[in-house]
Image (tube, rainbow, N blue to C red; front, side, top):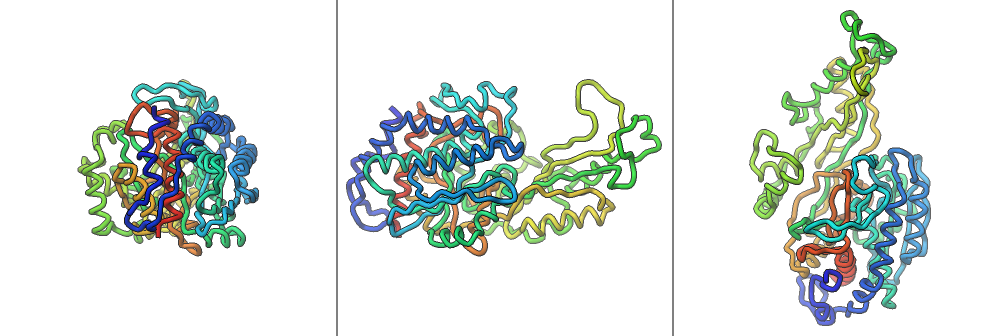
Length: 501
């Protein structure tokens, strides 16, 4: 049933709509396009499975060239006439265009890399792209990258195949940039976007769109007006660099007379946050952090009334928010607080049993989340200066990736289009100031482009960066769209982009 039931009666697509801000003209009859979506369902799902089965892990330098070539092939098959591999100092990017002869051009951001996966933690192999039944939800595809981001991106490919299969051209032109390093902090993405030919093409677009699976299990959709920035870095404490402690691992009995680089690192880490670990304490780190405006606070308060706190805690596996704050305050912190987080902490022996050594080296992997008007460059400089001031200047700070926060105005055409499509689908979207996660949208919203950017897409998935990541293919939940419903939402979106003024 799900594949035949969309968000509105398809007969309505042939009549004029008087939506606020929408041009007063007859709606195009999208019935033939919707028929193509259903007809091409199996091949579209198989395309997604093929994509998932190709590992493309920048952090391990595994399968990235192959993943890039596969993505380029899929772009060409979807109708992009100019598809170019863009070399960088890291993994390659992609620049592609599709000229439909339309008055309006839409920018697209894709990523083709995925996070690492430990097969031992998965109930279905992460590269098998198996179709399995999930009780209470329907048929899902399980695999690394299923929802982040190959599932939504494959659904967008299916949109273009369906439009062409119906004998039509897309209602907008496309300029696409893709990268293979998003999961390691996009260290070389600016080298792709800031090429003269790419900037020139993007300047012709009305904004940047990234496919997403925006529906929760209750069917609600959320629109975020931006995202936090991020710094990913390693702090390395070593006896050699410190000039104290051993230059190689030694017997732990020597701790009575030899300094420990591991304890040196722990002491340095303790200075970065408040005693409970919740507030950044880096000198000057948050000096430019912009407080929430009254409008943003009102937006969050409205969202808190609609979002389920109990469900959020269950999803995260937690029982308390920091300092037992209220649900509304927890959301405010999520939107507005810069953070200093330890991703991993490694030093010495970590295998079975014990091994009585004094390690010569210890490493902490950190991520620092940034809010407007902070910048990655200033935050990194603050971190280094803070450590040096406190006697930890010997600790190496190696930034592996990161970028500035991103923001888009609530009244931007791109956001109004999203709201219109979601509302016509019967869902009043929840609006939030920003995503607490990060994506490199700053290259679009910042200088020199200053374009609006946002995510859109019905459908559902979960488990990004975790075992058993999945994307919903055929839904048994009437509130949530499966793959075909996600594709149809993109069709609606593109035609709304073309006609909204």
